[in-house]
Image (tube, rainbow, N blue to C red; front, side):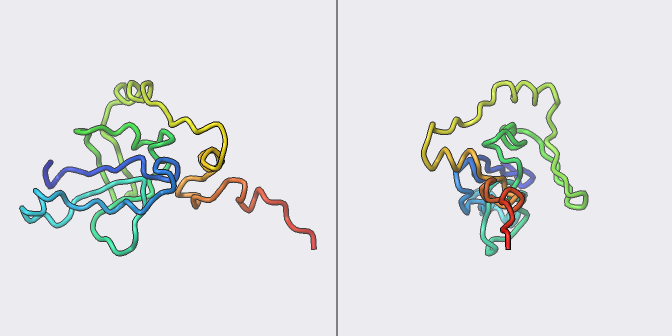
Length: 144
């Protein structure tokens, strides 16, 4: 790991953790912090409080647990971040990504219970992590 490395935390989103815990603040690894590194790019499908600092990309959607782009990231991959273009690029060939996608398997929810309800219906971070059946568009308007 070098100061140019990008740290990736995946499977910490609404379905992956589950519940999207406050885990997005990835500290600088001690060996780099001791060498004076104060910031490095960190990327996650998790969330964090507003008290953390640095170059951190959070709430990546769709999250890794449902097959989003972070699911296919592996150690040693190159990633390009352009804040100006609001864009993240995984610099891996389409052939290799296809191979990884073919071996990726989603988490299978239990057959019943609250966890099944949650995993079947929770929305991604960009849609508010609410239940899809509570979405305003899905609820009939009240007759006055």
